[in-house]
Amino acid sequence: MKVDWLVIRNPTLSFRIDKRVPLMLLCLAGVVVVAMVMNIGRGEYPISPLDIIKTVLGLDTGNPDHAFVIYNLRLPRTLVAFMVGVALAISGTIFQGITRNPLADPSIIGINAGASLAAVTVIILFPSAPIYTLPLSAFAGALLMAGLIYSLAWNNGSSPVLFILMGVGLSAIASAFTSLMITFGEIYNVSDALVWLAGSVYGRTWEQVFSLLPWLMIFIPMSLTLARHLNALNLGDDVAKGLGTHVEWQRGLLVLVGVALAGASVATAGMIGFVGLIAPHMGRQLVGPNHEGLIPTAALLGGVLVVMADFLGRTVFAPIEIPCGVVTAAVGAPYFLYLLIRNRKK
Image: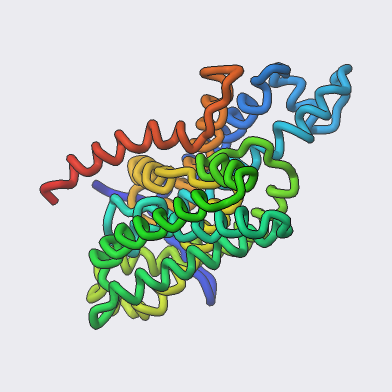
C-alpha cells in the first residue's frame, strides 16, 4: 500500500508524518472539544453547550452561576482529566516503542506503581506537605523504579523482554509496600490515599492544572523531538545502530520522558490504568506506526478517553460518582485480555 508522507526538515530537527495525520488531528481536536463540553455541561446543575461556550468566551449568559460552576468546579476538573490522559497516552506510546511490546504500559510494567508508592508515602507521612511536592515525589518514585528495572534488565545492553518482566515483578513489590503504608497510616490520611489510589479527578482545581502543566510543556516537546529515534529503536537495536542511533543514550532519554509523564499524571490523579495501553493501539489504527504522527494522535485519544471516563463515572450511576480509574479499568482489562489472546502466537 502506497503511503504519502509530509516531510519537515531544518538543520536541527526533522519530521516525517503520514499525510493522514493533520486531518486526523483536526478531527480529534473537534472530538476533544465535544467531550469537554459534554463533561462540563452534565451534572446536578446542567448547563447548555451554548452557555458553556459563551461563558468560556467571556460573553454574558444571563446567569452569573454559570461562571462559578464552570470556572471553579468543572473546567479545571475537565482540563486535569484531559492533561492526565495526554500524559499517560504518550508515556504508553514511548514504552511500547522502546520495549517493542504492544502490551507495555506504565501501569503494567511498574512505573505507576513506583510513583504511587512515593506519592502515598507523602500523603500518609507528610500530609501537610505543599502540593508541588506530590508530583516531585511521584516523579522520583517512578524514576527510581525505572532505574531499578533498567539496571536489572541490563545484559550487555538493555533487554526489552527483561525490562517488562522486571517491571512486573517490581510492580508487585511496590504495590505490597503501598498496602503496608496504608495499613499502618492514620485513618484520615489513609482515606485520602485510598481515594487517590482509585484514580479520580474529583475536586481537582486550577492548582492541579498549573502543577501538571509545566511537566507537559517540557516533556511533550521532548517526546516529539525523540520520535524518530523511537522509530529506529522499534526496528531493533542492530537496525537502530545501523541507522546511526545511539541506542542506550536515546533509550535512556525516552525512558526519562515516559517516566516523567507517567509520574506527573499519577501524582495529579492517582492510578488511572490502561489509558497508556489503549490509546497507542487506537492511534496505530488511525495513522499507522510512525511515531511522529502516532504520539500526538495517541495523546488526543488518551485525553478523550479520560475525559469520557470521568463523564461516564459522574453520570451513569448519578448521584453516586465512580472514579474514572475504575471506568478505564472496566474497559481496559478486557481489552488487555483481547491483546494477550491476539498476540499469544506472535
